[in-house]
Length: 541
Image 1 (cartoon, rainbow, N blue to C red):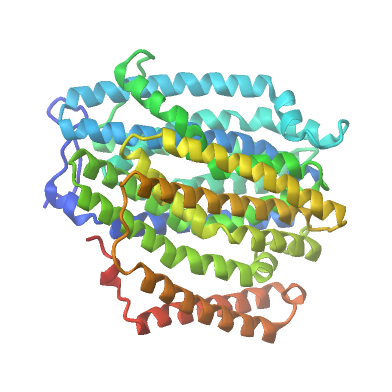
Image 2 (tube, helix red, strand yellow; image 1 turned 30 degrees about the horizontal axis):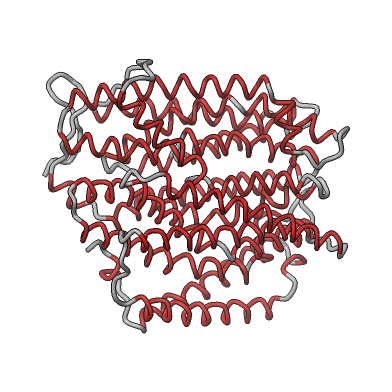
């Protein structure tokens, strides 16, 4: 078998066929493991970054301004980068690969690259020019003369260029994923975290408000990732030339598919933006508390939900193009069962370990014990929705692979409406009760909205006769429930033995956290082993 799956023809253009042995060897489980392991390295780097940020800058107004200034271009990244764009681009590319016309694929890539670059440059320029108004919009409930709005606008002008670089990086990653090369695209976020860590340690001292170094670190991260990913495309014989023609058939197809996915593929980010607006009515620290809670709940989503969704999209697209309905259904059923196996215990584990995690990872320097308590409350509330968030990452490719983007868009619109209503209700009630945990109401509403989104997507697939659950679901969920109960019992006994995690020294926090995670995880997987589950049962059918 050829060791290097380079796709180059005699003229150096993009070739469409991979050796069949390579296609067969890279099963869904193996590809997911590669993507997940690379993402794990990124998450480790991310928690080093977050820990430094918490200790150096705390949770004050400057950090909250950065959170908003980062969240807005980061949401747009989900549209023009790995979210909406990838969901529209990969199925079209897979369809062209099935046809086997190399020149047509090269022409498609050239025009998509040119159109994407033109659009993100315009959006970036508008974002910089309109930054004061954007800041006022997303901080609409903050005090009009608040320094938070002014700092957010200034940081937005710094962070918006990140959008251009990360969008082109994502284009390169989507091409690599379509070729079943998942390692480098999954590893590249490590550079993102490294750039921000560098900015915090090397640049913060030169700013009157040190937190501005975080904003510069984001843009530096975009530049660094682009400089690594774009040249790497040449290893696969892919050399996109920037040709601008919005009337090109391939470009029109991609953008037509993208428009409905703007809501559906980024509904979780949309809900976070909605939460950002409502959080502006609370204390300035609320934005930071929600940011750190989001970072913790993103761990299982990024490691497994995004990994499975990314890997399964090109697979489902090929099954649909080949009209293999049985293979399509098996792959989707595999993805959903795997998500439940990982997502449900991840949610339970984060709920029972919320405060120990926050104390161990963040509580030092300017990040106080009170901050730990507030972030832990939000983590516990948001964690309820983790299995649903992960399921959505698997269910959405089932629509996109069939180039159906309208159905998930409709579901997403209703999800956002529900989220707004729930946030307004929860925050109003908690403020009326003078509760200090009003920010946790935002997290809880987002979790409930996520559950609705996943349930609605699954119902639509059943209604459209696209997905039929295979046998064994009842026993599968029952075993997961029993294993989670044992895991939670073990972890709670350890927490009872340790007592208040916040008063421990840094070293002892990590030691006991490692003990709790190892014991809880060991109990969970031991239960499944006793139930008869083996690794071979998770392999691709």
